[in-house]
Amino acid sequence: MKYIEVEFCLEPLQIYSEILQSDLCDIGFESFMDTFEGFLAYCQEGLYSEKEFKLLIARFIELNPEVDISTKIKEIEQQDWNAEWEKSYPAVLINDFCYVHASFHEPIKEVEYNIEISPKMSFGTAHHPTTFQIIQLLQNEDVRGKDVMDMGSGTGVLAILTKMKGASYVEAIDNDEWAFNNAKENIDRNNSEIVVRYGDADLLDRDYDIFIANINRNILLQDISKYANHIRKNGVLFLSGFYTNDVDMLVEEAGKYGFDLDIQLSKENWAALRLIKNK
Ligand SMILES: C[S@@+](CC[C@H](N)C(=O)[O-])C[C@H]1O[C@@H](n2cnc3c(N)ncnc32)[C@H](O)[C@@H]1O
Image 1 (cartoon, rainbow, N blue to C red):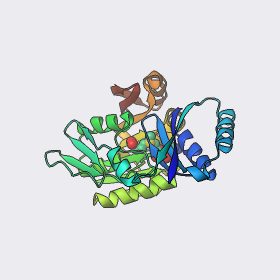
Image 2: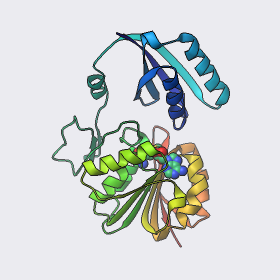
Image 3: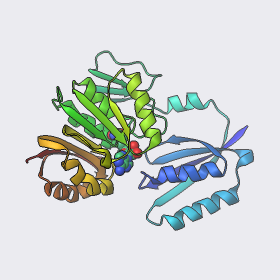
Protein backbone atom coordinates (compact mmCIF):
# COMPACT_ATOMS: atom_id res chain seq x y z
CA MET A 1 0.00 0.00 0.00
CA LYS A 2 1.23 3.47 -0.85
CA TYR A 3 1.13 6.46 1.45
CA ILE A 4 1.13 10.20 0.97
CA GLU A 5 3.72 11.93 3.12
CA VAL A 6 3.38 15.66 3.74
CA GLU A 7 6.27 17.53 5.32
CA PHE A 8 5.04 20.59 7.23
CA CYS A 9 7.23 23.50 8.33
CA LEU A 10 5.50 25.88 10.74
CA GLU A 11 6.58 29.07 12.43
CA PRO A 12 5.60 29.42 15.25
CA LEU A 13 5.35 25.70 15.84
CA GLN A 14 3.80 25.36 19.27
CA ILE A 15 0.01 25.14 19.46
CA TYR A 16 -0.41 25.31 15.69
CA SER A 17 1.04 21.89 14.96
CA GLU A 18 -1.51 20.33 17.33
CA ILE A 19 -4.39 22.24 15.70
CA LEU A 20 -3.25 21.24 12.25
CA GLN A 21 -2.72 17.58 13.15
CA SER A 22 -6.19 17.35 14.59
CA ASP A 23 -7.64 18.89 11.38
CA LEU A 24 -5.59 16.46 9.28
CA CYS A 25 -7.03 13.49 11.18
CA ASP A 26 -10.47 14.62 9.97
CA ILE A 27 -9.42 14.15 6.34
CA GLY A 28 -7.80 10.74 6.72
CA PHE A 29 -4.25 11.39 7.97
CA GLU A 30 -3.38 8.70 10.48
CA SER A 31 0.11 9.26 11.84
CA PHE A 32 2.49 12.11 12.55
CA MET A 33 6.19 12.38 13.28
CA ASP A 34 7.62 15.54 14.86
CA THR A 35 10.59 17.20 13.18
CA PHE A 36 12.63 20.22 14.27
CA GLU A 37 10.66 22.63 12.12
CA GLY A 38 7.25 21.00 12.06
CA PHE A 39 6.09 17.46 11.44
CA LEU A 40 5.55 14.75 8.85
CA ALA A 41 1.97 13.63 8.27
CA TYR A 42 0.93 10.35 6.64
CA CYS A 43 -2.25 9.34 4.84
CA GLN A 44 -3.07 6.16 2.88
CA GLU A 45 -3.05 7.03 -0.81
CA GLY A 46 -6.63 5.75 -1.26
CA LEU A 47 -7.93 8.03 1.47
CA TYR A 48 -6.07 11.14 0.33
CA SER A 49 -8.00 13.89 -1.43
CA GLU A 50 -5.96 16.72 -2.89
CA LYS A 51 -9.04 18.93 -2.95
CA GLU A 52 -9.77 18.42 0.76
CA PHE A 53 -6.13 18.91 1.63
CA LYS A 54 -5.91 22.22 -0.27
CA LEU A 55 -9.15 23.43 1.33
CA LEU A 56 -7.85 22.53 4.78
CA ILE A 57 -4.60 24.45 4.23
CA ALA A 58 -6.44 27.47 2.80
CA ARG A 59 -8.79 27.51 5.81
CA PHE A 60 -5.87 27.18 8.23
CA ILE A 61 -4.06 30.14 6.61
CA GLU A 62 -7.21 32.22 6.69
CA LEU A 63 -7.79 31.51 10.40
CA ASN A 64 -4.13 31.80 11.40
CA PRO A 65 -2.56 34.51 9.21
CA GLU A 66 0.29 34.95 11.74
CA VAL A 67 1.67 31.45 10.95
CA ASP A 68 4.25 30.82 8.24
CA ILE A 69 3.46 27.45 6.75
CA SER A 70 5.05 25.41 3.96
CA THR A 71 4.31 21.89 2.75
CA LYS A 72 6.13 19.31 0.63
CA ILE A 73 4.11 16.34 -0.60
CA LYS A 74 5.44 12.98 -1.77
CA GLU A 75 4.22 9.49 -2.38
CA ILE A 76 5.97 6.72 -0.45
CA GLU A 77 5.75 2.95 -0.13
CA GLN A 78 4.39 1.49 3.10
CA GLN A 79 7.15 0.95 5.57
CA ASP A 80 7.77 -0.33 9.02
CA TRP A 81 6.72 2.82 10.83
CA ASN A 82 8.27 1.84 14.13
CA ALA A 83 11.63 1.08 12.57
CA GLU A 84 11.53 4.32 10.58
CA TRP A 85 10.62 6.29 13.65
CA GLU A 86 13.34 4.68 15.73
CA LYS A 87 15.93 5.46 13.05
CA SER A 88 14.85 9.07 12.93
CA TYR A 89 14.73 9.49 16.69
CA PRO A 90 18.18 10.03 18.13
CA ALA A 91 18.78 10.17 21.86
CA VAL A 92 20.16 13.41 23.29
CA LEU A 93 23.29 13.74 25.38
CA ILE A 94 23.69 16.97 27.37
CA ASN A 95 27.27 17.70 28.47
CA ASP A 96 27.99 14.08 29.44
CA PHE A 97 25.68 14.84 32.37
CA CYS A 98 22.25 13.76 31.23
CA TYR A 99 21.19 11.31 28.50
CA VAL A 100 17.57 11.55 27.40
CA HIS A 101 16.70 8.46 25.42
CA ALA A 102 13.86 6.22 24.28
CA SER A 103 13.34 2.58 25.28
CA PHE A 104 15.13 1.36 22.14
CA HIS A 105 18.39 3.13 23.13
CA GLU A 106 20.79 1.61 25.64
CA PRO A 107 21.53 3.87 28.64
CA ILE A 108 25.13 5.15 28.88
CA LYS A 109 26.89 3.96 32.05
CA GLU A 110 29.31 6.88 32.24
CA VAL A 111 26.55 9.47 32.18
CA GLU A 112 25.28 10.65 35.55
CA TYR A 113 21.56 10.77 34.70
CA ASN A 114 19.91 8.49 32.16
CA ILE A 115 16.28 9.38 31.57
CA GLU A 116 14.06 7.09 29.52
CA ILE A 117 11.25 8.93 27.79
CA SER A 118 8.34 7.60 25.78
CA PRO A 119 7.95 10.75 23.71
CA LYS A 120 4.67 10.09 21.89
CA MET A 121 3.16 13.47 21.01
CA SER A 122 4.41 15.39 24.04
CA PHE A 123 7.09 18.05 24.04
CA GLY A 124 10.15 17.35 26.15
CA THR A 125 12.61 14.97 24.56
CA ALA A 126 15.57 17.38 24.93
CA HIS A 127 15.89 17.69 21.15
CA HIS A 128 14.49 21.19 21.37
CA PRO A 129 16.95 23.93 22.39
CA THR A 130 14.65 25.15 25.18
CA THR A 131 14.59 21.77 26.98
CA PHE A 132 18.28 21.23 26.24
CA GLN A 133 19.23 24.57 27.80
CA ILE A 134 17.14 24.11 30.93
CA ILE A 135 18.86 20.75 31.42
CA GLN A 136 22.21 22.55 31.01
CA LEU A 137 21.18 25.06 33.68
CA LEU A 138 19.99 22.27 35.99
CA GLN A 139 23.40 20.62 35.73
CA ASN A 140 24.84 23.30 38.01
CA GLU A 141 21.81 23.72 40.23
CA ASP A 142 21.93 22.25 43.70
CA VAL A 143 18.38 20.94 44.04
CA ARG A 144 19.03 18.63 47.00
CA GLY A 145 16.30 18.84 49.61
CA LYS A 146 14.45 21.52 47.64
CA ASP A 147 10.82 21.83 46.55
CA VAL A 148 10.51 22.00 42.76
CA MET A 149 7.69 22.94 40.37
CA ASP A 150 7.86 21.98 36.68
CA MET A 151 5.12 24.08 35.05
CA GLY A 152 4.31 23.00 31.49
CA SER A 153 5.99 19.68 32.13
CA GLY A 154 5.40 17.98 28.73
CA THR A 155 7.04 14.56 28.96
CA GLY A 156 8.06 15.36 32.56
CA VAL A 157 11.75 15.18 31.70
CA LEU A 158 12.76 18.23 33.77
CA ALA A 159 10.76 17.12 36.80
CA ILE A 160 12.33 13.65 36.55
CA LEU A 161 15.83 15.13 36.35
CA THR A 162 15.36 17.31 39.44
CA LYS A 163 14.02 14.34 41.42
CA MET A 164 16.99 12.22 40.31
CA LYS A 165 19.29 15.05 41.42
CA GLY A 166 17.88 14.87 44.94
CA ALA A 167 14.99 17.35 45.15
CA SER A 168 12.76 16.44 48.08
CA TYR A 169 9.36 17.31 46.60
CA VAL A 170 8.71 17.65 42.86
CA GLU A 171 5.44 18.58 41.23
CA ALA A 172 4.65 18.73 37.50
CA ILE A 173 1.70 20.56 35.92
CA ASP A 174 0.56 20.56 32.29
CA ASN A 175 -2.67 21.82 30.76
CA ASP A 176 -2.58 19.24 27.98
CA GLU A 177 -4.22 15.94 28.88
CA TRP A 178 -1.96 13.93 26.62
CA ALA A 179 1.17 15.47 28.16
CA PHE A 180 -0.25 14.95 31.66
CA ASN A 181 -0.71 11.20 30.97
CA ASN A 182 2.61 10.92 29.19
CA ALA A 183 4.45 12.55 32.12
CA LYS A 184 2.87 10.03 34.51
CA GLU A 185 4.02 7.17 32.25
CA ASN A 186 7.57 8.55 32.04
CA ILE A 187 7.75 9.13 35.78
CA ASP A 188 6.83 5.46 36.33
CA ARG A 189 9.39 4.34 33.75
CA ASN A 190 12.10 6.16 35.68
CA ASN A 191 10.85 4.94 39.07
CA SER A 192 10.46 8.51 40.17
CA GLU A 193 8.11 10.01 42.75
CA ILE A 194 6.53 13.16 41.40
CA VAL A 195 3.09 14.68 41.89
CA VAL A 196 1.57 15.24 38.43
CA ARG A 197 -1.42 17.53 37.95
CA TYR A 198 -3.57 18.46 34.98
CA GLY A 199 -4.12 22.21 34.72
CA ASP A 200 -2.21 25.48 34.85
CA ALA A 201 -0.94 28.18 37.21
CA ASP A 202 -4.35 28.43 38.86
CA LEU A 203 -3.65 25.08 40.55
CA LEU A 204 -0.67 26.47 42.49
CA ASP A 205 -1.30 25.97 46.21
CA ARG A 206 2.13 25.65 47.85
CA ASP A 207 5.56 27.34 47.72
CA TYR A 208 8.71 26.23 45.91
CA ASP A 209 12.47 26.85 46.04
CA ILE A 210 12.87 26.12 42.34
CA PHE A 211 10.27 26.90 39.71
CA ILE A 212 10.75 25.81 36.09
CA ALA A 213 8.51 27.03 33.27
CA ASN A 214 9.40 26.18 29.68
CA ILE A 215 6.18 27.21 27.93
CA ASN A 216 5.95 30.18 25.58
CA ARG A 217 6.32 33.96 25.73
CA ASN A 218 2.66 34.89 26.08
CA ILE A 219 1.76 32.33 28.73
CA LEU A 220 4.85 33.27 30.73
CA LEU A 221 4.08 37.01 30.54
CA GLN A 222 0.55 36.25 31.65
CA ASP A 223 1.44 33.87 34.50
CA ILE A 224 4.73 35.15 36.00
CA SER A 225 2.81 37.05 38.69
CA LYS A 226 1.07 33.82 39.72
CA TYR A 227 4.38 31.92 39.76
CA ALA A 228 5.97 34.70 41.85
CA ASN A 229 3.35 34.25 44.59
CA HIS A 230 4.58 30.67 45.04
CA ILE A 231 8.35 31.10 44.92
CA ARG A 232 10.23 31.58 48.20
CA LYS A 233 12.68 34.42 48.83
CA ASN A 234 16.03 33.60 47.14
CA GLY A 235 14.18 30.97 45.15
CA VAL A 236 15.12 30.32 41.54
CA LEU A 237 12.93 30.72 38.46
CA PHE A 238 14.00 29.02 35.22
CA LEU A 239 12.23 30.31 32.14
CA SER A 240 12.36 29.15 28.53
CA GLY A 241 10.15 28.74 25.47
CA PHE A 242 10.79 32.11 23.83
CA TYR A 243 13.25 33.69 21.43
CA THR A 244 16.35 35.67 22.39
CA ASN A 245 14.61 38.82 21.07
CA ASP A 246 11.96 38.45 23.78
CA VAL A 247 14.38 38.19 26.70
CA ASP A 248 14.16 41.89 27.69
CA MET A 249 10.38 41.72 27.80
CA LEU A 250 10.43 38.64 30.04
CA VAL A 251 13.15 40.03 32.33
CA GLU A 252 11.25 43.30 32.73
CA GLU A 253 8.01 41.51 33.59
CA ALA A 254 9.78 39.19 36.05
CA GLY A 255 11.51 42.25 37.57
CA LYS A 256 8.09 43.62 38.60
CA TYR A 257 7.70 40.64 40.91
CA GLY A 258 11.16 40.76 42.45
CA PHE A 259 13.26 38.63 40.11
CA ASP A 260 16.83 39.50 39.07
CA LEU A 261 18.38 37.95 35.99
CA ASP A 262 21.31 35.70 36.89
CA ILE A 263 22.13 33.60 33.80
CA GLN A 264 21.03 33.87 30.19
CA LEU A 265 21.65 31.13 27.62
CA SER A 266 20.89 31.13 23.93
CA LYS A 267 20.84 28.28 21.42
CA GLU A 268 19.56 28.52 17.86
CA ASN A 269 17.89 31.80 18.82
CA TRP A 270 15.97 30.20 21.70
CA ALA A 271 16.63 31.64 25.15
CA ALA A 272 16.72 30.15 28.65
CA LEU A 273 16.99 32.22 31.83
CA ARG A 274 17.89 31.67 35.47
CA LEU A 275 16.37 34.37 37.70
CA ILE A 276 16.59 34.78 41.47
CA LYS A 277 13.78 36.12 43.65
CA ASN A 278 15.08 38.94 45.83
CA LYS A 279 12.09 39.31 48.13
C1 LIG B 1 7.59 23.82 25.42
S1 LIG B 1 6.74 22.51 26.18
C2 LIG B 1 7.89 22.11 27.48
C3 LIG B 1 7.88 20.68 27.92
C4 LIG B 1 8.98 20.29 28.90
N1 LIG B 1 8.84 20.99 30.16
C5 LIG B 1 10.35 20.59 28.31
O1 LIG B 1 11.05 21.42 28.86
O2 LIG B 1 10.70 19.99 27.31
C6 LIG B 1 5.45 23.38 26.98
C7 LIG B 1 4.41 22.55 27.70
O3 LIG B 1 3.57 23.47 28.40
C8 LIG B 1 2.23 23.06 28.32
N2 LIG B 1 1.42 24.28 28.53
C9 LIG B 1 1.04 25.20 27.61
N3 LIG B 1 0.36 26.19 28.22
C10 LIG B 1 0.33 25.90 29.55
C11 LIG B 1 -0.21 26.55 30.70
N4 LIG B 1 -0.88 27.69 30.60
N5 LIG B 1 -0.04 25.98 31.89
C12 LIG B 1 0.61 24.78 32.00
N6 LIG B 1 1.12 24.11 30.94
C13 LIG B 1 1.01 24.68 29.74
C14 LIG B 1 2.11 22.40 26.96
O4 LIG B 1 1.06 21.48 26.95
C15 LIG B 1 3.49 21.75 26.80
O5 LIG B 1 3.47 20.41 27.25
